[in-house]
Image 1 (cartoon, one colour):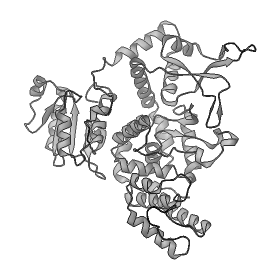
Image 2 (cartoon, one colour):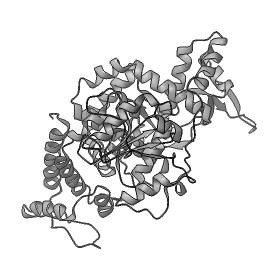
Image 3 (spheres, one colour):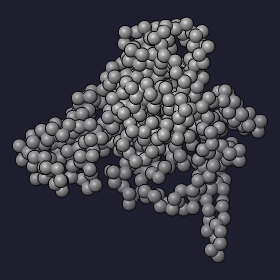
Image 4 (cartoon, helix red, strand yellow):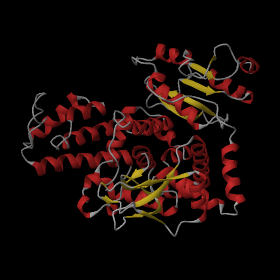
Length: 477
């Protein structure tokens, strides 16, 4: 990277661009050069950006920034956060803009985005989020403090780092102990897990890990008084975790590459980007909750009411340079139940390698650091290869197939996926002509369509969807 700001700062800038409707990619490799554009604004389906944003770049990057700004594809080059004196030292052409890092008090960059964007939100970005941009500590500070703590105690640094890694990406997976109810009804006694490593106990005592109890009931899981260790939520721990996760993924690139090398490129792209790194194997779910809807990839959209989920989705969108609509469609694709067996083998391979880990967040899942993998494996380079036409067709038939499902909001779903009601009506009319169902019913009807022959209706949709999946993901059934 050309600067020492954390990924967190670039995420805020990228999220701000996404808020105004731009398709964004972080760390975009420019036309075969080794250096990267910190944040690139791309048109959907194109590999080269139209706007290049650099965040407090070093003077040594002047030549590269100048070449980017002179490219025919680049309409605007913007440098954020650089002091005026340093900007002058770079001796760049006059067309390059310099602005302050945006926040609630520095609005020049946001005003510029508003002026060129077709999307005009009512409220400014920083009035809708609690995120602020601030200069981080020097990179080694927090991590060195962590390493010194473990080394000074004569413990295994790699073991301690892996405890941070697995809690950072997977939630509840280190059993801390168990609360045992007293016979007299008094306060329960706590019995610590006797198999805890010394490194884990140290990290709990030092405040890097904290205790969390599993709910008594949740998605078929029983707590039995169990208590787990999770990552503490203070800023210092977050910085340590970020460095450790990045280093771990970088150090295991050959392992990751070997797993991904067994699958087509577009399958890797869809599985990692569309899943956000969460997969629920069927075998991990209790008997009473053993349903297809509780397995596989979580189905979500950027319009979710879950603010944490929205932030995770936007971060992934910005990492690989796709639109919100495209992510919604890819997520729809990989949450298709018939892909479960293939996805289970895929995520299990990550888990067996140590890159993925099991953990609880309500439902027990396999977790992988999807954003870091997408970055290190340069999945963003594949974004322009998405078969958008086939992906749209898949989502059309998926929406039709689920139209009569209980609780399914048909019209809200097609709006989230950016689907044409006219195209959906045309596909339904084709099925109606075969006698499988009615034509699309008027708005306000109890159901969008009446299904006359469920088996034939379902099979027709599934055949179409399998064909689309084969085309998009380059797989064979």
